[in-house]
Length: 309
Image (cartoon, rainbow, N blue to C red; front, side, top):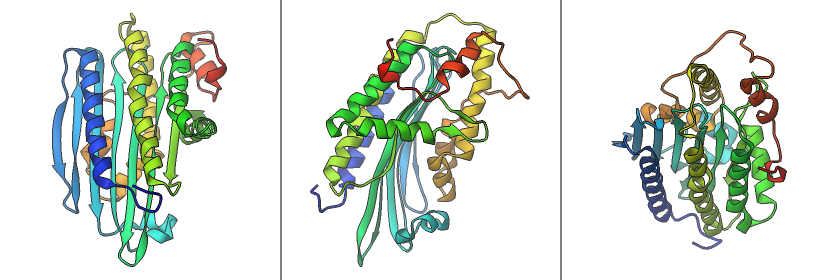
């Protein structure tokens, strides 16, 4: 790929399938007992995907790692309304999206996504961009986990410029924010969208760096927390906080909304939702408790690179 060409969809698809394989193998190795089931599917309008779901593990209560490559003759009106240049174009969207819900309340939920979109018309230059990132949602916060997560995110961005991590970290803090609750979903990470520098090779390399960085960021945290003793009190708080995750995904998440509006496969789109969740009316944590500390220290944008783990 050169600066004047659109992304190489074949190369991107090959990378994404390999990424899905590597992430699933690593998570199975951590859990030791449960295994991913593979559900290959086709989309009547064009394209398809490979959904992989692990459920009922000793470490992972549920994990979904989805590859999709969908095509269509035209975008839904809701998409082209915001991007008029997309009207009347055929499109392709491909990516890997994952959400990991551990069983232990001390082990955080994590999400990652890397994707590419291209819209074409015979009489015009293609419109394309990359997007993605990864973010962490703890139920009980630990400084060393947050510092490690953000240092790994910074390392993934470093080859592409000193300004990249601060910009995409701030974008993540802004994006994963529940406005109706006035609180962030977690401790952030990276988020970027509409990335088209004019150099498709460079932008694809950045997508690979983010995708490859996910396991480096998450596995040490999962290994550190998965065997922490806990009781029903911690489990109850975990299920309550999972409700925030559901609210964000169904109200704000662009990928979820685009997938549903474009006729995507519902099972694959909603695999990010946790298997168990609770809501409670007007609940607040006990002052001075570990649950209160989550709100006081961790549910605020923070420069974790300057913290000492």
